[in-house]
Image 1 (cartoon, chains in turn yellow, brown):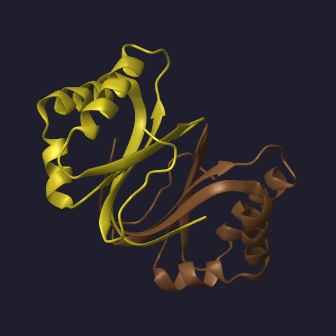
Image 2 (image 1 turned 180 degrees about the vertical axis):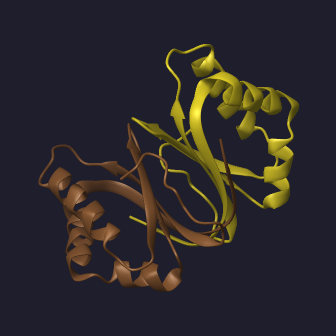
Length: 105
Length: 105
């Protein structure tokens, strides 16, 4: 994905996923890469941004709530969510937010 | 700041600031640290999360749009914004979003 997502004019939606990881990889890196590729193929996907130090932040952008719900219910993504809860993340928070305004340099 | 922000039940607001940096520090690290400390003192500040690799993502959470506007207009923050545009950032996008729902592990 490009570094700063090129999103259309608001309104659109953001899914802000903030997490801390457990020790070791346990298949995480490969699955994270696969989920990015898979998300990009979903209807309504507008872009994503990601960075990780002590905390990891991934923000994905979506056309509407319907496209977010469909992505959350994707079978392969559901399996990744299950493994995330079981072994990859020590903690996470997911926030669904409606982008009302944006500006860029 | 704590790694994953402890925010109250929605609705509340998120400011998603995604950026790429220019080369060199030029006073950036000290100012960034100062802005985190200053933001924490503002009315309506609820927390923040930050990570940087190739792209930097800082998400700050706020009670309402009024508190975001007041922070944007803070004199010391205005000077930081000016220097950010002039020398620290090669590109950035700021998005103002209303958090409608969240859930955590």
